[in-house]
Amino acid sequence: MAVLIRTDDVAATRRTDAWLSVICDTLGPLDVRMDRDAPLEGEIHAGRLGSVGVGRIRTSTPHSVHRTRGLIRGGGPELYRVVLVMSGQVVVSQDDRQARLGQGEFAVYDFARPYDLAYNSGVHLAVFSLPRDMVHVESIGRLTAVPIPTGDGTGALAAPLMRRVATDVESYQPASAARLSTVVTDLIGTAVAEHAGRAAEAPEESQTRMLLFRVHAFIEDHLGDLSLDPATVAAAHHLSLRHLHRLFATQDTTVSAWIRHRRLERCRRDLADPALHDTPVAAIAARWGLPDSAHFSRLFRAAYGLPPSEYRRARLLRGTDRQGDGTRMQAPAGASGPSWWT
Image (cartoon, rainbow, N blue to C red; front, side, top):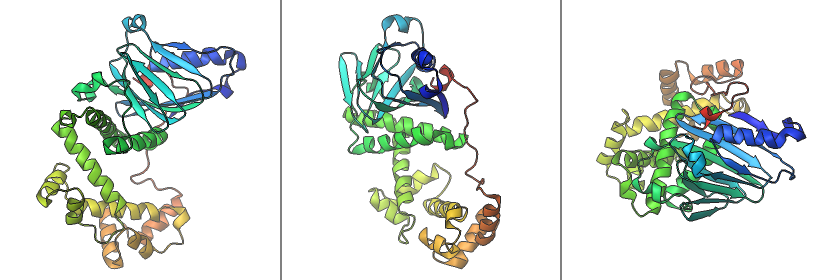
């Protein structure tokens, strides 16, 4: 994720102007109001998750940001924005609605209509920019500046995922980032639709992706359980086995193949971890639900081309595991401007 500004790196006499410039360059034409005599401390980061812009803002200086009708007439991208409060408190206002958000809460606002965003003390925010054509929930325009519940339902899935994505966005490979952008957008849209009492508004394709996301998350949490199998997964999600198999067929795989793949991936990552170099290969395999050493060795070699012990030696000698984990999305040096969040 590119560091667009860190106030400690800017001379005190230039900090306010530099900060305001970065906000307007990255978030679009905005009226930013703050006390110029107040000490300015903070930093702004920006990156991309596929077609979704992702940014983080951390500051201890009170601000208010206003998107006025005059600025809208000046143009700007067709976006919905989502603000997630990672710490502090924020007030988002749009269309005579006002959302007071605390830590872990989020709300949507429409960049194409006037809005205000304000915080009176220190905050750490994640901001997502979603192209309007990616959001397929008809009621979203009536639910801007409304707090989306995150204690249960889809909101409880969306908030921690957004926080993690905002923290780790630079670590995802491009193909993974593109898939995650769809998952994040669908989760946000479904959470909004649920809050409206209109979950059926989420298109069937989005509902399928959300179900698959929940199933994948369940499998990931139970990889070490020897009883994990298609029947267990189906029962946990109140699905028939036939429905579950159809769901995975849309991904050109099977439930059992996916479980096996994820177990092998967890083993591969542990084998490449220098901190686990003293842990026996068999113990790592058993930890992830593959207790039969000979069977595990055959599966691992078929998947990665080397027996587990040889793979471990090769990876630890190289000092890093690059197969399947490697390409990081790095911002060009000094990158800034609206291309990052729009």
